[in-house]
Amino acid sequence: MTRRKRSTRILEKAEFRVAGLKAVDPNISFDDTHNLQNLTQLIDNFHNMFDEYNAAIAMIDSSRKKLD
Image (cartoon, rainbow, N blue to C red):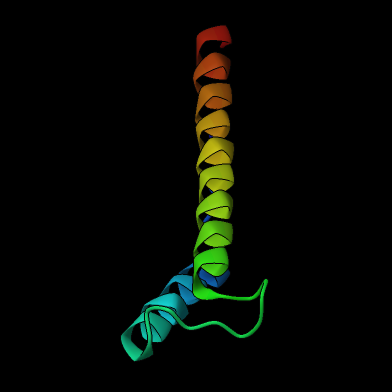
């Protein structure tokens, strides 16, 4: 039985919110550390970690099929 790959609605919502903020003002900044660039970077980092997780699950499933 293969493991299900994960998906996240939180990541999707964050990406939609960034798109909305970019439509309002592409250089929006709330203070020194909270700005659109930092938010986009955090989303990209999380997206990469999420992709790595799903790739690892796929590798585990592939190895398990070979063992079976």
